[in-house]
Image 1 (spheres, rainbow, N blue to C red):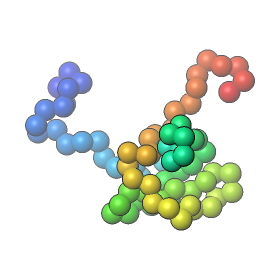
Image 2: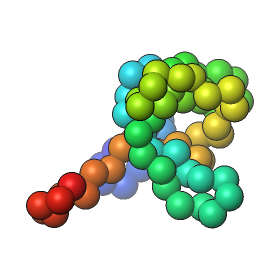
Image 3: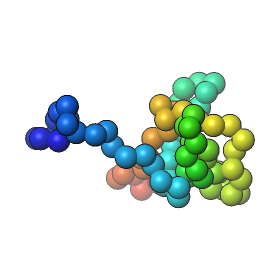
Image 4: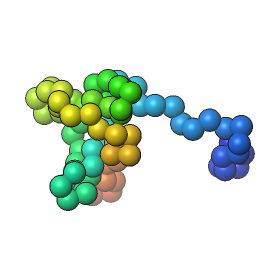
Length: 78
């Protein structure tokens, strides 16, 4: 990567390792939901664990429906 621009020799960012806190795209409304972490990476995408109770969800989420956790900043109630 040169000056923030990927060239032909640059590989894409690495995958998200287990334990990484992530947001998951809600399949019904398209909004992002927080409170998850990567449980494991599989061929089709990722399995995620719900942080509130430690449950690994049975569905596999494609990489497009997972992003590194984003927290709101500067809000006193968050």
